[in-house]
Amino acid sequence: MQYPKNAIGAGGFVAARRTVPEFIPGNAWPKKSSAHNSTIDQPSAVIVGAGIAGIASAIRLAVKGYAVDVYEGNAYPGGKLSSFEINGYRFDAGPSLFTMPQLVDDLFELAGKKPSDYFNYQKLPETCRYFYEDGTRFVADAEPEALARTIEKYLGEPAENVLAHLKNSAVKFEVTEKLFLHRSLHKLGTYFNRDALKGYRNLHKLDAFRSMSAANASRFSDPRVVQLFNRYATYNGSDPYQTPATMNIIPHLEYNIGAFFPKGGMVSITNSLVKLAEDSGVSFHYDSPVERLLTDGKRISGVQVNGNRIKHDVVISNMDVVNTFRKLLPEARQPERVLRQPKSSSALIFYWGIKKRFPELGLHNIFFSQDYPTEFNHIFQQKTIGDDPTVYVNITAKYEPGDAPTNGENWFVMVNAPANDGQDWDALIAKTRQNILTKLSRQLGQNIENLIEAEDTLDPRLIESRTSSSQGALYGNSSNNRFAAFLRHANFSRQFENLYFVGGSVHPGGGVPLCLLSAKIATEMVD
Ligand code: FAD
Image (cartoon, rainbow, N blue to C red; front, top):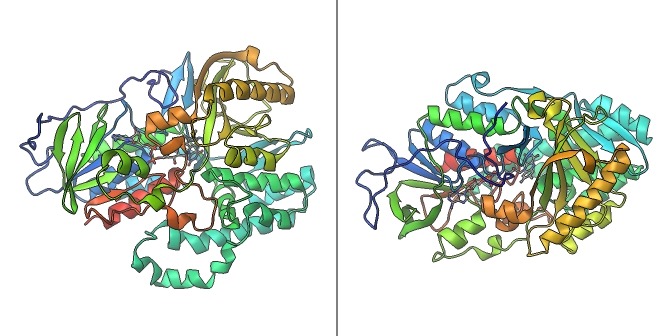
């Protein structure tokens, strides 16, 4: 199967699709109201960036009747959620875990389409295969009851503790979902309605005054179980020893709602939504970085792309909010308190084409470090990667055999890394590659280096340069303190009445599901 080499993980890029708008050079406005063939009465919107939140916003605005143009700096859509191929091995460049698929389906339904005509996925029977340094290994079942029994069998933790934890996670989700996830935190109306009042009565259940790890250590007797549930802090790039226990909401997504695999890999989320957007009339313009947002008093009058000024009624920025202000609006007031918040973790990824099959591995595999507190101290305090990082291996060929040659597997090998602060990444990459190879070779009883026949690397510098994410952070600001949710930028601008923000750097946060929700919140505010 041939895939376009179109991802943040790939060295060279080839345009996946390309539409060239008619720009009027110089300082004059285009004769038409926008680059899009909008009618005189039709309002127009421009989206800066074709990340997943930008694409979702485009669909939502097109359904609302807007003529929508999406300007994307890269030659391909999806930003972090893209894909590439090396020597017959296909890789999803970034996200590998798919949760809350209903949020994708919602977009097809909103546009009056049948989701399965565009996008298909299946529920996973197992969530992850765990490997500990003491030799313990087991497969985590997707169903809570089965998971609890497995953990009891392999780690000796009473099953009822695991079930109580997952129940507690569900309660946290219930309290936060309507209050924090579906609404702007920056509008008064959010705080004065029936859901909010119900939420206030249950705020204590969020457990915001101790860390995730402290809560888990008080629930579980076996440190390996604490480590397993502490891992969920990394799902939004935080440190389990700092992030509030509120984040114990995350396992609910994976166990109570489920983990899924999209047919064709994660990139099919991007590709199917781009198709839906195009079918809904949206125009995508690739290789078209927006250079400036043009201001006119309290409004954004348009965008500047390749030196051309293009007029639009509404602007939605899917560019990281820090860089939207610093690079596109350098003369506007900068909301410094929000822009200077510490960043979430980033990642170092090795894409390895492995010329062997490993039946003991599944789609998601975790090889834990021996000392979790030290690992996070390295990332968040020392801003480096220690010698024994937890290693995550994702192999989509387990579900899509065409993603690797016969008898081969496409390994996406990731360790958590600090955000880019100018570290000596070349030295860190070389050292970490060796440490990972040593660890995996020991755990799997094979010399892994000898099996690598294709390779590429992604590091925080490249994530930053290829997606404009501030410091290459995967999830915008970190969630390492209990006020973090309130210190993310709002989905709208207080300075410019027609400017909105979506994506992982703004409310409600990073990760594919929350990015999709940011598009819903922002576009519902667009009148
Ligand atoms: P981004 O993906 O950040 O894309 C922004 C887009 O805007 C880019 O295409 C960029 O080129 C474009 N752009 C920026 N500035 C401009 C400009 N001035 N003009 C034109 N275009 C511009 N999430 C999960 O849910 N599950 C996971 O398992 C998971 N794992 C991850 C692993 C990795 C390695 C990475 C990198 C991320 C992971 N995430 C995961 C996080 C998830 O990928 C992101 O939160 C999400 O994809 C971000 O989407 P976004 O809409 O913010 O846009």
